[in-house]
Image 1 (cartoon, rainbow, N blue to C red):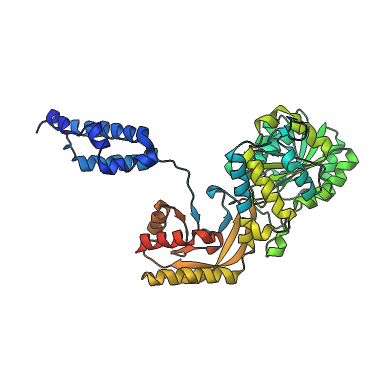
Image 2: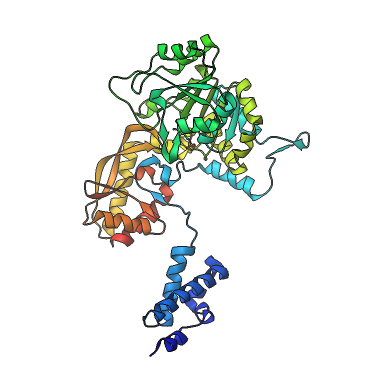
Length: 458
Ligand SMILES: *Cc1c(COP(=O)(O)O)cnc(C)c1O
């Protein structure tokens, strides 16, 4: 058959559209995307036929349309089961939210709210008031402000406190964290002038004092927590309380960028000490900023707490408008903070429940998974392993866990198949075995996880 006859033989858009398999896609994708997929698939087939390929059967066209929709026009953001054991997994959306935080988001999402409305007076209100008092109560600070994320919080604070002036920072704290956030670059964006003191591994009190005594118009001393790395060996840094003391002598405020912003003592969970927000406020930092979705365990947010004389001007700065938090974030943050104020953080906040999970409980869960797989004829072991906190918090620190381990040929291919599964499962490969850590798998995800394993391995 010649090419033009082959082209004429191709089914029409309508014919493909009416195929039952394509009609079944309609409720989810809607007519517009389905028709677009059919047109693009037929266009591609026409090009192939002109280039000498045989024209496909209508069934083959339908299969290609379905594949096209799934590959190119499906919504891409979706829930994933995290079996990696990395608790605050930045690539997997950092902190899962508590039931109360999710309910609070749903409640303000469903209808209207008093986001910027003062109910007693019926006048315009401010969106920041909703969490400010709770944050002050929780951290002991005088004032608080919530913005879109901590990178924004640092940018805003530097802009307001130090634009056109100098900011002192130790060379050991010129950090880069994930996603291209680098202290020197944020500093440049804010219009502040970076004044480096000390060396990469050792910075002393006298380094700060010398720079301050030289009097080069220093507006601020910045203390940045080296969240995601550790320097070991011959090292020295000046702690926050001492920096505050130095600052006081020269009349210069100190800002602490804590990154994670722990509100619970990580030592109580067998981890290294992570600086706590309350401590930093008590140590006399003028401003303390931290993330909402790292060790706080809430929504993506940047939280600034500190003295009113510094925080209040930030609220009025135009950049605060550009960085403002939305109502869903504020609702979830408020509910998350209440968990701390009710002393129920380790029971209610998912990341703290994961951090606090005893190894016996993880062992029981891993064994339960192993039994379920064995009933399906799949062999697995339960072995010792380590979970990590992640999210640029507590580098090198691990928690003992129990892993489900599958000794299978080509574990990387199975891991890839699990990632393609719906819902996707992200596992780890360790010593040529595929391992899954129950610590980061939510209990309600277990049935789906086991189904995925059985489908991929069965
Ligand atoms: C994570 C982190 C940030 C950025 O916080 P985001 O909420 O991710 O924007 C800033 N500074 C430090 C020290 C951090 O660890």
